[in-house]
Each structure stands twice: as structure tokens, then as C-alpha cells.
Image 1 (cartoon, one colour):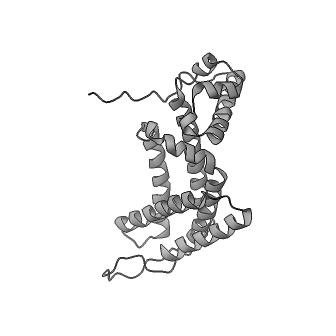
Image 2 (cartoon, rainbow, N blue to C red):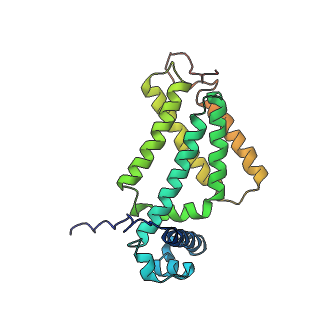
Image 3 (cartoon, rainbow, N blue to C red):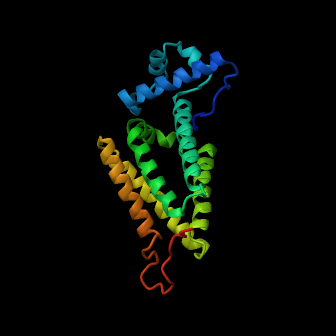
Length: 225
């Protein structure tokens, strides 16, 4: 049996006027509301159109199906995360350790603030995770982190920096996803984010060893200036 066709996830057309931009914004806001109140399994274009107060036909002018709406929401989230991460890690006025602490705290807060919508998007991820746009977004994030790791650990080789960078990303994603499953107060999020940042700095280059057992090379340390 041939594989099922991949749903189209790109916009049918891009809004050119403020009125059409407002319509797309209303559709996306309604989509977030439907996702957070009803979940990905009950997410349909009809429900989104009804929540947005527009005809389904108007929705279809821009989004060919629900996968396209979900992908736009996910793309917007990727771009926000990428811009946030780039702004923090490329700020050379601060030490690498301070930037890593800031990244941990900011990422954790974002995960908690957007927990409901992110869970719904994760449920729908199979619809778009292999799209070219998805690969490009992941590449941008990895390139941003790679540039930071090169600056932070100038004495490490490329393989070591890549390994530590992957550990940082995996730790942030795993811890953030797990921690955001339960509602938290601002004070709790701030305290946990600070502790997470210290763990990354200390355990992944800020003063502790990072090499596996049997590695005789000196411990890596984050560049302090």
C-alpha cells in the first residue's frame, strides 16, 4: 500500500493588506484557544473558524487544512525560541556562564507559560516535524548554540563542543517539558530556572569535569571573560 500523502502545510497565499493580516491573526488566536481548551484531537478547521467568527471559506483562503494552521503556530514558536536564544547567547557583553544561566531561566519560563499550547503542538508534531521548514528551524537553533560553544569552550575540539551543546539542548527540553506539566508560581519557576542554569554551568563546563571516565584530558571550563 503506498504511503499516505503528506498534507500541505504552507499558506495558500500570504496576506497583503492590514485587513487580511488581521484575519490571519484572528484565525491563529482562535486556533490557540481551540487547542488549549479542546486539545489536538478535537482540533478542526470548523472549530477554529467558529471561534474566530469567520466563515470556513475565509479560513481556507489562507490555510488549506488544519495541518497548515498547526504548522504556522509551531513555526511562530520556533522563531520566537530561535530569536530569544540567539539574543541571549550572542550577547558578548556578558560572560558565557551568565548567558547560559539566562538561557536556562528564560527557556524554563517560556515552557511554563506556553505549556498548554506546546503540549497540543507536540501531539500534532508528526504532521510537520519532517518538513523543510522544521529542519531549517532546528538547524538555526543548533548553529546558534554551536557558535556559542565555540566561544565558551575555545580549548575543546569540535566533537566535544558538539556533545556538550547537545547535552544542553536535551537537558533544557527534557527538564522544561517535565517541569511545565504542573502549574507553578513565578517564584518557583525563577528558583528552579536559576538552579537549572547553575547545573548547566557547573556540570557542562563551568567548573566540573565533562569528559567520560578514562579521558585523561584536563577538565573543560567555560571561558570566563
